Length: 223
Image 1 (spheres, rainbow, N blue to C red):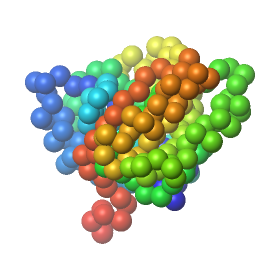
Image 2 (tube, rainbow, N blue to C red):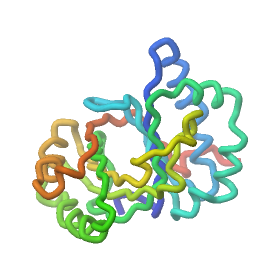
Image 3 (cartoon, rainbow, N blue to C red):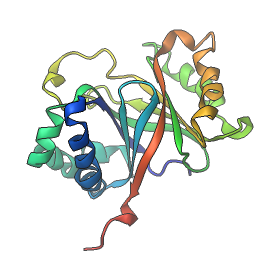
């Protein structure tokens, strides 16, 4: 199974250069481990942009989608550390998607990630999912390990920054993830969607990211 679990939290943001070192230190020394330790979280992966915006991207896999609205996760959000509060306040251009993993094909995870943000038509979700099921097949694509579809929950997909209450037309967007062995393998696979005449009007953004590191529940120190 390329992605463990059924739910995924996607977060992406920029941070100003003055605070970037502190931001990375916080993510690497506290935040990722803190999140993976939450009941129902399975693993986390952290990326930096090779070609895309925002600059930083993180993916958190959960055993079920319901974990992302569970008492344990809500308690973690309501009880951020002071270090977390300071860094979250500096986020810019934040994207936060709380999603169901509805398609996941292939085996394993790659060192590079392609990401395509789609805005499904109001009445065409089933048809779009059917089309993507055919497109998200890595078997004939050199350097592509696995491909996935995330479907945001509009009610839960809100940033943690002060502008969270603002209406967000992209809260219900979908994300295609392309796990690859190298950044150079991503464009050809992404073109199957970005250049597809039927899908191109739905594409909001796309980008290519490099893996910084990952952490699984089994990596955490035993208590």
